[in-house]
Image (cartoon, rainbow, N blue to C red):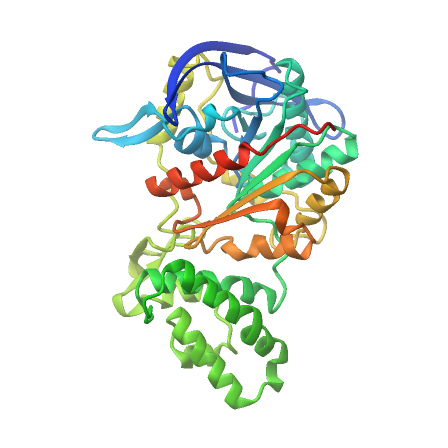
Length: 463
């Protein structure tokens, strides 16, 4: 991270126009710098957000505001900002990424604010400060929650419906922010959208295997390593989910007391669902880890699958990198970063104090989860339960990709179910995509349509 010499609170506004969901809109882009404090109360970083506010789009008190961030936890907002929902997005051109109007932006339905959490994007620590507490679950959540409230106040939108939209660890961040808002008695959002849910609470024996199995089945379906029997991927996933919740869970719970004939039958059913040979499954006591599956499913072709998107493959012989860099579906190119910097400077008139940091894996490795806690064992879903006690009408949207092995699509749903988050309060969508659903054109179009419908139901009901 390149430290800022001093804290700053610039606000830069520029005028634009675009066409979204068939509707032409004039809008203002508002780049806002917000100083945030560490646990000692000292200014430790400047958080940068990129707001897009439609002009003449009706009563602003009725128009929702979506605050959007990615995960990591060391990821900037750039994937959702510049690849999914921003008014201008980057697409691959012959000589690199180019900017185009984003027909799928949600700006026709809501104003958008993309936030780079501390240590990512343009949000850097201030020289001479100690930002360590900002790289923890609680410190990060508190800082980003304060940025949200500051933006609403500064832009006269405290009476507007608003929602938090987080992807991957961003889904955990959104729920941790609810906890921070409850503790600070700040107004709660009217909705939360949890994309590629990664909410922890699935690290124990049995549960971690049960939530993973439907995803492995979907991947096997995609690579045609099983007999599909005419099933769609949706149907195959549901079939595997039913098996995982019943026969598979019961077999794992019995462990060494499971009768041999039952063990053989369960292994045979697993083989038919996920394409891994029965003898391998029996040798693993009916369990198979993510790495073993990714390297074993296409072993006959000397290929391994990706983890963020298991549709992508690479020769096993070339997969000699240290995790997570060994994932063939992880892209860390610099071309997109350079294009983002040009966009911010030329279109939004924002001069970066240092190079834009799309992904800062150093934050991931040093993240403070809490004593004795890790990402997989942390529990975020109960924060949503507590928030909905105070605000029962809070609306929830969740989505996941069938081919995402990193947080399996069912894992977050399981965590929400166990936390007693009412299903009738949730819009749940699965897509035939990987971790970042929007990377597929069809996935972006469908997710945008689904989220637009969800946004239409957001109503401000007070604090």
